[in-house]
Length: 261
Image (cartoon, rainbow, N blue to C red; front, side, top):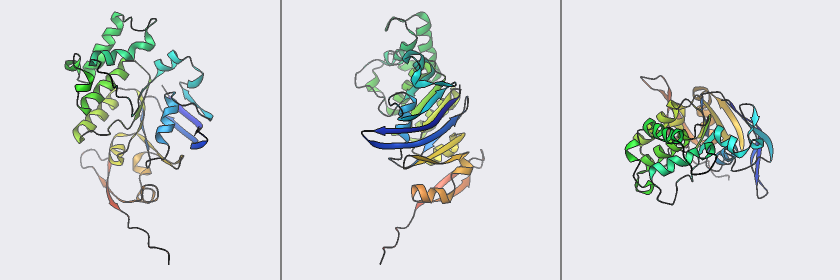
């Protein structure tokens, strides 16, 4: 299902965090949002999973205004893994994944066999079926992310929104999480902190700076040394992966500008 963000502006407490942002995510595509801290990435994503309402513009899912949909229907179309997704209560893994079925239940908590099968299938898909009886808080960071992805998959959405899903994970876990997301077949919009991971895994990138989209396109075209110097204040060296042909990035800090006499 296609996701379109059409000229969205986000304002919170009188501050404009995002300005006239337009993004397009094609059906089944993995699209990344990159930008410095405080650039507006998370605020924009919060509009897509309905934690914020745009001050202007629209979020369209399958051509329909997401914020005009019934909340249950919206949750059937869009699932999210926000940065603050971890639960503070020690539910079992099975209970956490079952939360993804709530938009499909007529009465909350009254699971059907179809609900239970969707949860089992989601845990199998992320390789976490053996964790079903474990307490969520006892898991490692990588295990928690896999379980939260399973919860999103059990929700059976058409669009998946992820805010920094690889934060605090080691490199093997980062690659596992992004491989799971890619294999889901869903339309995916994700904010990523690591530019090299974004370059390697995303079909299209949107670069956000000071609340505005400043560049978009395939990673090979977007992540130029000139843009990276301007937006991220780093000197970038582009290399080609010897097996995949994807652009990979090496970084050095830019020297501090000379003081004005």
